[in-house]
Amino acid sequence: MSVLNVIDTQTISGSGSGYIAVKSGVIRAYAASASTIQIDAGPAITLAAGEAILLSVGKSKNAQIKAATDAATMVITVLGGGTPAHRFVVGDFIQTANGGDTAFTSDFVSAASGGKKVTAVTDTTITTDYDSSAASADYSLSTADVSAGTVPVIQKAVKLTAGSNDVIVEQVQIVGG
Image 1 (cartoon, rainbow, N blue to C red):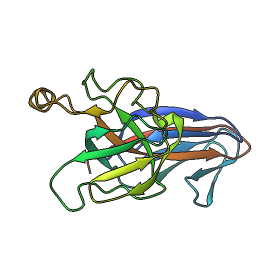
Image 2 (cartoon, rainbow, N blue to C red):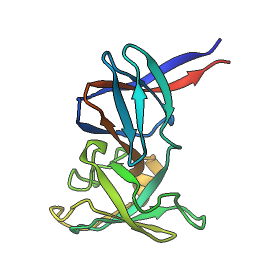
Image 3 (cartoon, rainbow, N blue to C red):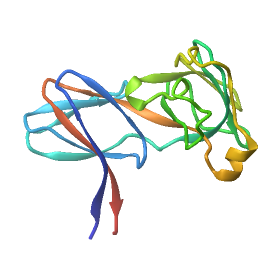
Image 4 (cartoon, helix red, strand yellow):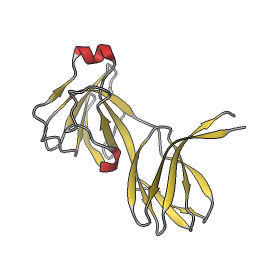
C-alpha cells in the first residue's frame, strides 16, 4: 500500500500565484470549490470541488554554488566537473540558499517565492534575473566550506497559478508500493 509523505504545504489564493522549490517532483492539489491550477506556463488543470489530484511538477534540479557575482543580474558559477556541470535551462524558476555558509549573505539568497528566473546558461554558469548588487563583493566558495559541507545551492522552483478559487498545494513523496 502506498502512502503520501507531505513535504510542505502552501495555499495559492484564488487568481493568485505562488512558487515552490521542487523537491519530490509531485504535488497534490486540492480546491474546496472548483478551480484550476497552472504549473509555470502550462495549461490550466481543472480541479473538481473537494477532490485532490496528484500532479507532476518536473524533476528537481540543484547545483552547488562555487561563485556568484554582486550584480543586477547575478551570475552563478557552479561546482562540478561534468559537462555541463548543471541541468538548468533558460526560463527555469530558481531559489538559492546559503547551505550553511555565512559568507553567502542574504544579498545572494533568493527565496522560491521571489519568482526569479534563469536568463542564460553555459556549461558552468547560470545567469539569473536576481539582483544581488547590494552585496559588498562577489561571493567565492572557500576550501573550508567545501570541507565542512556548507556549500550554497541553487534549486529549481515552479510557479503555480490558481484559478478563481484558492488551491491548497502539498508537495508529496510517494512512499511504499
